[in-house]
Length: 137
Ligand code: HEM
Image 1: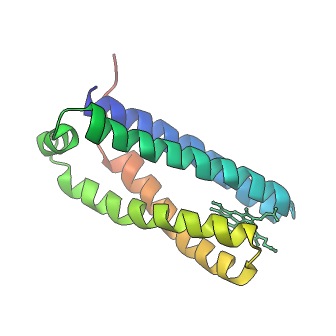
Image 2: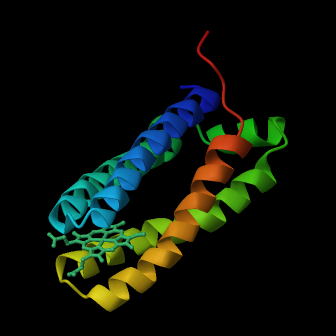
């Protein structure tokens, strides 16, 4: 598996789950709190599947250094480090978001939601626009 193609697939996955997340915020703005929660449970599950899939490809199936070599070749190691600076904390916060949402810890959930929004937007921009991908054709 080519690292550039894996990055392309992950970009498509991030765009797709971001559409879901924006949908959950629209639901919230319309007062449909339960729908917000339902959509975000799907958002949570899909994001974890993508993350887990990436880890399996990078560390189990793929050859050692798959991503590192590819990023070095494209001069994108710094871009990846910046991207991870947003994506790793946002993945950690995701668990806390689901927990506080389900437990109706409203104040904490909203406060963390602001931090999560900043981190997710950073993840999106640095991932989609700054990491090098390859097209299969
Ligand atoms: C900008 C981000 C977010 C904001 C401002 C936000 C805000 C809210 C608010 C105001 C509620 C109602 C809380 C209550 O009155 O009990 C809520 C519920 C909930 N949120 Fe979020 N949220 C955000 C992101 C997320 C994320 C990322 C998740 C999951 C990964 C999530 C999962 C939930 C769940 C499960 C509920 C409970 C829904 C229900 O009552 O059935 N939220 N959220």
